[in-house]
Amino acid sequence: MPAKIDPITLEILWRRLISIVDESDAAVARTAFSSLLRDAHDYTCMFTDSRGRELAQGTLATPGQSGAMALGIRQLVQALPPDSLHDGDVFITNDPWALAGHLNDVCVLSPIFHRGRTVAFTACILHHSDIGGRVASDNREVFEEGLFIPLVRLYEAGRLNEGVLAMIRANVRTPDQVNGDIRSQIAANHVCARQIVRMLDEYGLSDLDALADEIIGRSEQSIRAAIARAPAGVYRADGVIEQVAGQPDVRICCAVTIDGSDITVDLSGSSPQVHWGGNVVYNFTYAYVHMAIKSIFDPEIPNNEGIAAPIRLIAPEGTVVNCRHPAAVAARMQIGHFITEVIYRALAPALPARVLAGSGGTPATMQMFYGRYRDGRPFHTVLIRGGGMGAGAASDGAGSFIFPANGANTPVEILESDAPLLIECRELLTGSGGAGRHRGALGRREVFRVPDDEHAPQSPVSLAIQSGRFRLPAEGLFGGQPGALAQFLVNGQPGNPYGITRLEPGDVVTMDAAGGGGYGDPRERDPESIARDRREGKVKS
Image 1 (tube, helix red, strand yellow):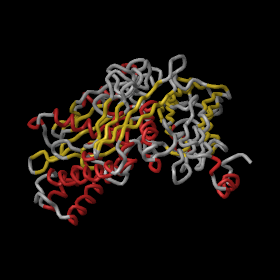
Image 2: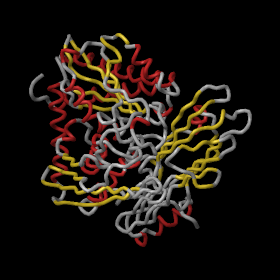
Image 3: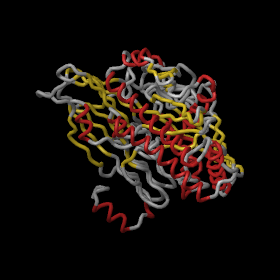
Image 4: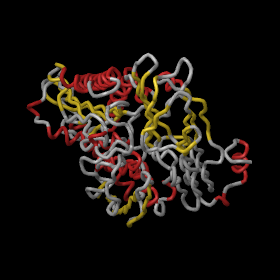
């Protein structure tokens, strides 16, 4: 391939690459066993060039996985001796410090061979509903949180290592589901590898490296140009995040420096790592720094290695944003999701039209139910839910979303088919969005009941929650008001959102997701919008 690719050919090849990784995505959606993957899309497919530089990722990628993979996969690839790789190798790991920050995110990594040479790598991370361990936010060490898999070969030259698979199955509650989801990842990698090789043959390419140079270089130029147009300076903000009961709240300190086309995010001064599962590894912190910078400066640019070039992250080791092993990390989103919001708040004075007020879906609410059906069969399912989006300079909050993560709200029917539970109510909460010139979106309520009739499960049903905004609401910007608080009730009484709740037949759980913050002075809201709020039930009449 020539050193410079003409624009038309480059666009054709780029679209081909995206179609390949999206076909891998579709393979997961078609074959995964867990509804967290099929319906909530909590997974990421990607591939790199021969040097491990991220080249493309799937449209449904989640920021926490994709940003962490951009760093982690390159490091894993560079640690693998090239002469040790074989066509048909498949590696597996869920090391939180190597990749996406907690044990549930399991990565399957495969080299792609073409004419006897390693030309690329493909990887798929799935958030497995079940990884064993004590499923709760208030664990003290990672050892409590489930099975820790170092980087090992699951297949060598196409031959399955039965011992690795047996070890995984022996450590989880629902081995058939976990096994099925791992095979879904392998299928996604196989689809990607097959289509990459087909593309290389069709276009007479020996590898992807020259194409990667062009795509990565153009992406870097684009984001650097966007950063350079912003006013230079140092912009600061702090964020306070509620902790488990009886411990001081967590603080994230942020200084964002814009210097020409370079940007530095310095999180020095943030709280020390905590004695529960909210700790965040460096890669996951980077992922949401990456998310903030990209969404503010160049949201349409494709995700690849070039986006990372202008960003420098300072995250002191031993803090909540760069914890040391063996810190508990299962609930890392309860702190990690706020990093994007704090960066928005820091840059609001410089770029007021490009940021959002606080969102009620930061952090996402994750509910894990597990136990046994009446006939003794195990179940283990995860429900991920959003809250009201924060308002922006141009519009009201857009709805009930999982933000800044990119996941879908699981349909009622899917949850009820996955577990012996009934959803009695799912509704938006009137008046829960923060007032402002633009109003924050409404939070929402979900009410679950454990059946007490012939459909009752064996008791108890265990419920673990990862969530937030129970005491500290989503903040407004520029005079906008905060959204309503989240709420967790068991039989009408406040429950413990950090430990494990044991539910008996007939118990009722109410989860209210927080509303989004408003943007601008509420007195500046136009009368037509106020009248529409009343007609649509967004505010109390």
